Length: 135
Image 1 (cartoon, rainbow, N blue to C red):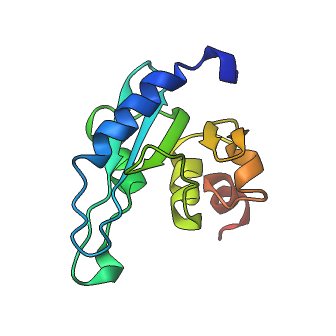
Image 2: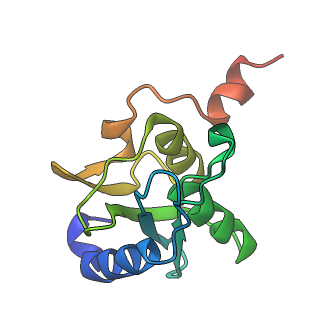
């Protein structure tokens, strides 16, 4: 898949919509994300905060949960935005989630343009590492 094959505007619109569903009473920083799945479905999520900050869920966590709850598959393209609709770069934890639930070639809209997961998480640790380096 190339960046030209992706309906980026549909992803952005859904990600922005998801910011309106975010539960963020502490930070007041809504985040929404949307992604295409290899079977053509769109999945999305929003951040859900908690008074115990360590158990707050990033928007990408919600999207990955939706991915698995609706049939699984692999993410092919993802866009994450803030409450103003501005592109956000996923944090390191969420990049790992995207790697695990996509591929090295999954496309990510970033503040610097479209990049692959291989570019935003170089030398990633994934399932193949467990198979080749585990006991």
